[in-house]
Length: 502
Image 1 (tube, one colour):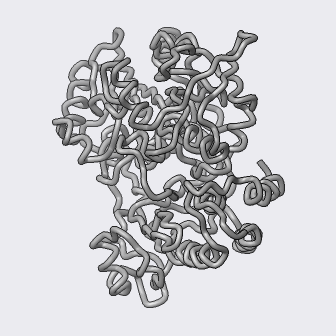
Image 2: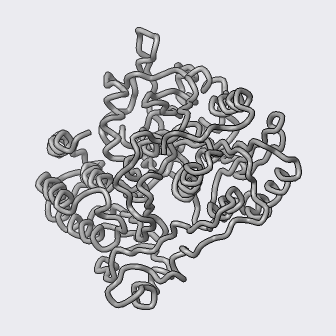
Image 3: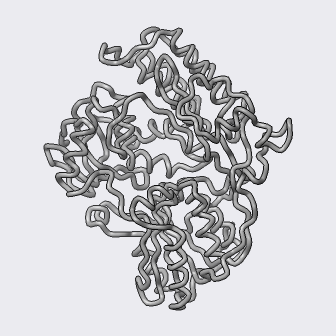
């Protein structure tokens, strides 16, 4: 949505938002003082601040938002303005949170005392489908498309919400993944319509509306567990391997690159991957389906470890080798600073190339070349991705994409991964958290960046085959991407052709 349409909406928001005593209010001076800290923190601590937006344009946007400050503004309305500005930077690791959150991990964005839409939803091709009805009314069938809520079309709601959802570069799939998977659709709906306590739903194929009452996050989580028999934040084991999915076809699920999460599930990444590669070679497997859907990343070098076993060429990791600056005047408001950051802030010179550089010394940047494994899998690779294929797993997609441009043995299926592989940069690594003192809004910025920004992306984007489930398949639990992949392999037993688009 163009900026010129959004800015009038921000002006309108400051007049229409309710000023209920139940919502914290901010004076103009409080908004201004927090905003000054917000802008300073961006300048000092966001590694990719002006990768995708010109400094003059960012300054204009900030000045325009500052002119909307009015007396007795609610913290929620103020928060949306800051969130809008942060989203303009186009970095998926940029985060901003209201104080207080639900106890359940998937519901962390939700405020504990506010009622929300009591449905688990999935966004497919920018349409909203029901996964699980957690309402008391039980009037929404699984897999049905919801076309309007309280008289507002879902298409309009999604278009309104997208400018408040950070994502990398030109990517949009991460926005929709977060809207559904982590309940930001519910969160933003309640911020945009704070008086809503019940929800009239218009369903596809039906002339009448149904209504469900809102639920607190704790109620929603409790109902979900009662209906499904599992926690709303329950995750399957991240590493799974099936040696014979079909004749000559193996399946490897890598659901995370986060060491703590993997080991908490009783698994060890390197030994597991090594055993899989050894088994593939021993069996002479020709086709491997690599499933990195909803792999949200991790910072333990696991993406590079896996890629080194899927390539025969040495490669250089993207790494994180640039910092935004040497001074951090907002440290008085910083929270949960790592020991690594404290060491850097106290003596940047020991980490940087020279007295004027913002480039890290190679030994701190993880950019040393990596040799391929002696025994790597060299067969045909089919990579399943979605909007949750993010951060380190987006790195893996980047490596595989650039390899296949030469070899042609890699095919991408599903939806575009949650990062922008064409920009060839990522800002993540160390984060810098600042609590704004008047509003207590928490800002979380990616401090480190890596790669070389490419401003000339191709017209055609990944995946090679865009596959998503239908509402019926969603209701029946069918894996549309997997079914497509197996059918493709049967039709192309020699493997995928060399792709024509780079």
